[in-house]
Length: 514
Image 1 (spheres, rainbow, N blue to C red):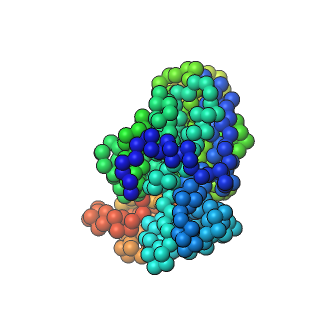
Image 2 (cartoon, helix red, strand yellow):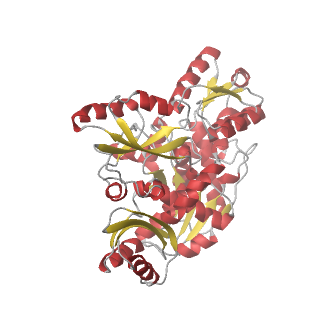
Image 3 (cartoon, rainbow, N blue to C red):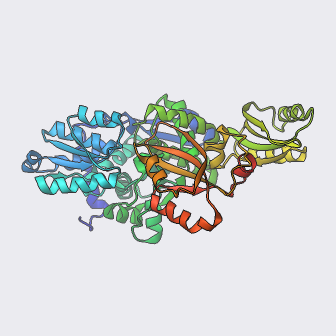
């Protein structure tokens, strides 16, 4: 790969990029409601309106439009489970080439069907993108096909850079920063090269999920860092290793990086919907989540920011999870574990206190209760709030009035599992270890987990909710004698699934552990 390209070189490539045979010049629209709330002007670059509902079409087509007639005739190949696959398939159809798309066997049928509908030949192989990538390289070598990389290619980068060209042309007034979601780095490399060549005063800020921040870690380490695991909620940016060229560009040209969490992204999806009545995928909402975080941190007013809504390929079933977490992400809902005396009138007294909290009455969004002993009861309570930062003050108010309270608003175990299964104390669950595990949604995943267990270990708790994604979140309690600690740790490492041990989590001790 060419390593010597400078912003001026990329500027020429972007200005001459061949993307508009298939891509549209997407609108740059003001987010009026969000702008009013933030006291800054927020502009939404609507790449979710592209023919394949993602910006990926730009880079894929530009790369393929620069291939020779012989290369096009022999065909192209890529590995992808998402938006890049659809971009390559559409580009190949337009250019009269044959596209082979290698996808993991775990890819949802809706995405496989979309690629086939665009004329791509789908080859299902392996359980992950890495397996699909390896097989795609093998097929490329066997058949003499041209590999279309999803991000680490100058022509792909240039195609994505046309987005920045459009933003600067569409926004004639002030523009203080452009916020860009980062996975492998193709989009932000194109955007940064164009903006720094034309308007170097405009900041380029990369946005990553806190659990998929390969680019941020690489820039800080001054070398590419490969992550052992990545979070899967924002599947469009779930990249373990960024590209060589994209890392070089990002390190040299990107002004700053912001990481956001799942709840913030869910809240941003709702914000986009409120202003546009459109639903973007998690990766498409990263930039909006980052703008909100940036404004809160820097206390800015009267500035203008652009957010690239980079995609809208969202599984409909996932909206259940997004809707549930959006209120907490915006901190319009707060969650608490409250201990109340098991005596007459105490529940009524607690409800009366909720109705007289400072700032006005709140609606109760959730209330889970089960008696635990003769002296006291633990309840799981959800309340509406009027803004950020209220949950800790409400918890203090409860405690001052004799109701010991634990603020759970930012506790993952509480939000994902315990809120649905309060009241599970058992004197039989001795030596219990509690784990949150991410399982791939495919046949045999649970069997593999069980087959690696020692026969002497017993499952004492198991909780699972399907959230419409390509993975499932499991909460499992296992009875493991202390003498088996080393063997248990080895079992978890061998298993290979991302996990978090929650045995010492105070929420677990209140509601589930004897």
